[in-house]
Length: 68
Image (cartoon, rainbow, N blue to C red; front, side, top):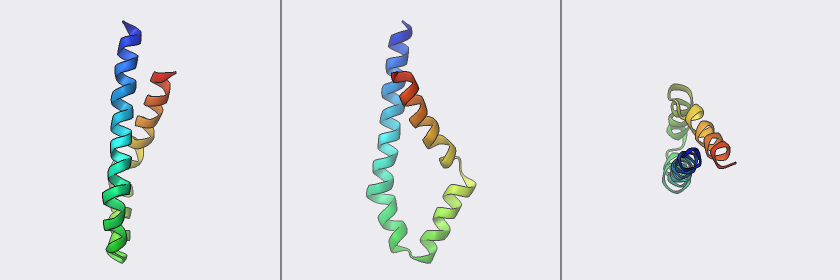
């Protein structure tokens, strides 16, 4: 039973992580670059005032640890 839970956790966390990375690279980054200075302000707000910088490493770590 424990292996099933770990496998599901591994798949869900991995899918979340990959989905967010693909969204960021495919959609978010081009828009931020096209905004110029405002894109930098957006990125600072995203990294400084949200939980994004904590959630992404946690999802990656959870994926690795639950798959080991």
